[in-house]
Length: 68
Image (cartoon, rainbow, N blue to C red; front, side, top):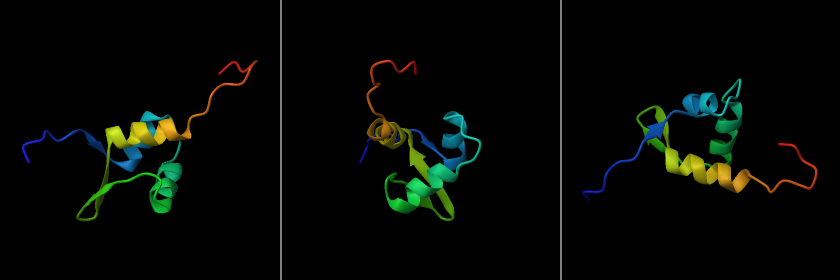
């Protein structure tokens, strides 16, 4: 049990890092069970590694001609 603890962030902080105007998308993903989290009392924290996994699962390859 001597594993290092990774970084954890709030749903609002994750939304801000993603440039979202509101954390609503993050809260919906949490409610659907798509994004796992840790509850500490009334606070919710998301592991940064879990956030990366969730984003990777949501990404899709660019189509020919896409500029993004």
